[in-house]
Image (tube, rainbow, N blue to C red):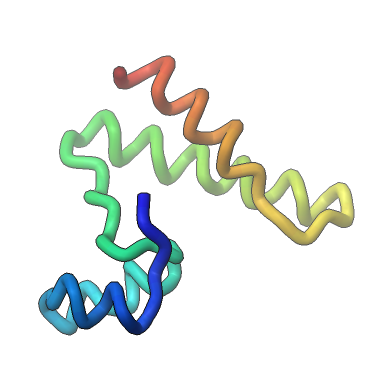
Length: 76
């Protein structure tokens, strides 16, 4: 995926409500949110777990790659 840049913002004009999401995701286009109840429940439960682990262990970054691998195993 293309990273978020000012050039990408000009190339892909979106609704201003999507602006915050794509900037924080660091992507040119926002990633779609989970669309089923099961996926939403799973996402919010697991993202909390993945965010707490670095905090407890004194790390600064969430391991999003592991989160995505786990997500893909379950939903893809």
